[in-house]
Image 1 (cartoon, one colour):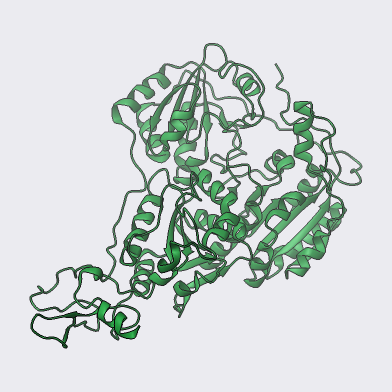
Image 2 (cartoon, helix red, strand yellow):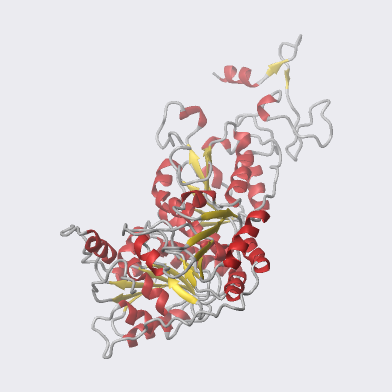
Length: 599
């Protein structure tokens, strides 16, 4: 057998029966065959004479492993989020000291931590999953990352190439099919030498608008194969300007409108357009609504022109916009509805303009005219093209209801609990919101007043918020931001990815988890009332000991029942060196999923 393998890997020169022709390899790993021109790109490994394999690899040969880590280093992808398995160990061997591996105990947490980290740093993040099994575990949050438009470069191990045909244990069968449709691109390189270039292409695709996750499957035996040399590093654009002619037409319609309304979406915050959004709104003197179920806040919510989030259903949303003749949606889908409540998409006599970077969002709009473009570039153009209308008076400030009962309820309601917390709120706090039934209360008592300060999930799939908060807190620690992260996570939502508490504790991250504990899936009860589906089983969640679970993962955990206890615990958490889980029992409330709109 040894002779057979040797014969396969060596070629004999004509007329010389024994002496093999081999290729000399320099210390830099580049081919120095006779006749090769200095500085030229080496031939692909499979085309070289005396192709080097694992069994006869020349010392100093650059491997796929070497080339890939060099590429990752040049791209700034030195923080890797993962939960490793046997198919990933060859990639992670001899782990470089200038890289950091962030361990998550389950892949749903891994992906969401990377999502939060990417959003907080405004850079792509690298994820390493365990073949098909790990990809399957992470799929819900891969879906969320896709809808959050977060650029994640997801790599996954694969079985050895020589065995894939017979589908051994842990084979990722149809490897590019599994993550679709929730990745922009999925690929398994045909040759080992193509791995670095595939990662470079994945990076370029992930970053271009609309940004989003990509997926590269890599067989475990590729890493020791000889590389074709250093990977080629490319740069790509991450935004594009709107069509000048079309945005001029939009501006003309805006100038002619008598009572316009602005609807701002998450792309404004993501593109760094917060100030431009404020300037345009003030110039237009129009009310500003937050797009329904927005995953980022894009306008200061204490501003007198702010009118809150639009309803999440067709009929009520249309009713809320009654009286406006032109609806201008910037950086959001039209619209992100949830339950079906019949009605017209727009109030009578109204028209709609949409500016969005994602062609899919433009195509899915049920009504209106769309323009593709980056939110910041579009707003800067509109500021120039639609000057201030001096004849229009600014809208009167909206007065939200923040009245609290006296004496307080026992147990407290969510609004009472959040109001108590807000008394100690740091001005620079970052909020993560995954308390579905209490989301409006969070926004009311913890209004966002500065950019990159509010994060939620665009998909509706629970289990993103807690690990995303861990990723955001890690970003703060690595960049020296020092902004505390406060995550409002429902007691049911926390169970989907509770393993992330371990990662937060191990890294002593400044993150505070506020868990309103109502022992039920309250939002599902609201949905059941709307849909008239009585007697649905298992909507109650008795028996959860969240404080003990938090302590078991290494976090500080405390149960608080009164306003005094809440403020004491929150004050202590703000001063702590690591994560804290504050559990607050709250009262059951019968509230409509979609509040009625008054005439």
